[in-house]
Amino acid sequence: EGQTVVVYPSIHDLQDLSLPSRLSFGRFKALKRLHPDPTRLAGLRRYQEGDPLRTIHWPATARTQTLQVKQFDHTVTATCVLFLDLYQEDYTVSRFYVDTEMAITVAASLANHLIQRGEACGLVSNAILAQHLPGDLAISDGDGMVQIRARQGAAQLTQILAILAGANTQNEKDFLELLTECGHQLEGAAVLLWVVPRDTAEIVERAWSFVNRGRQVLIFVVEKVMHRELLQRPPGSSLQVFAVEKGGARKR
Image 1 (cartoon, rainbow, N blue to C red):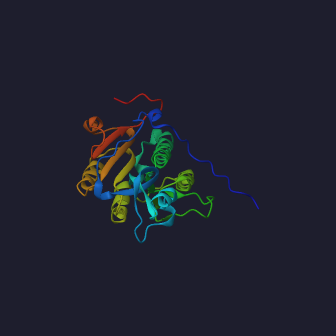
Image 2 (spheres, helix red, strand yellow; image 1 turned 90 degrees about the vertical axis):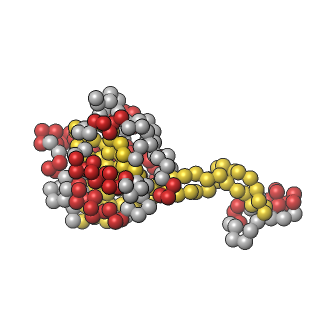
Image 3 (cartoon, rainbow, N blue to C red; image 1 turned 45 degrees about the vertical axis):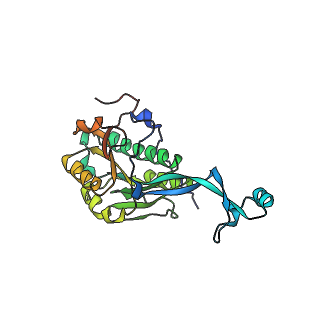
């Protein structure tokens, strides 16, 4: 029986795509999650019922003759969801293959960046999947949409890259339809990253509607920027547009 070989999309450092080397997120306290960081010891306190046994500090317990547990500093992670537009008619015919490949590369590179820095990352796309992909992917797909819920870790990145490797364009569901269908499933998502060919007026209007609901929206444009004033917004702004170009030379 033959084995399935999956060729993952290219991954680039963000600065190689004319993007900031580190994306800046705003202060969305209600939508971010606090996690104890076991690498950052903040101090000790007396044991309380329900404390995990693994947090007991045995040397301090022996010294004080009372159970002492470790307290850790907390790190903040944002739940991020990548939206990749693969609706055929949204792309310019003469640049179709170049720009759809670029969009997939950008999505892969963003997923890698986010997961490497410890964020939870999910993926939604109006794509259809190649039939030869492994059958153990934790995804939901059908009706011109592919979705994987946000999680942290290397296994999640592998899942996202495998999906992107098999993602094909389709001509039934456009990007605005995708946003409408998935809007109710974004509970807890703090940062939305949209990879699109152009930042049309309709897309920007929809982005502001998400911003008004407390989310940050970052739009990554692989063809032509139409709202150039959004390129110059300060890092961490609730809505930003980024022009993508290989080679590190920013589009003007």
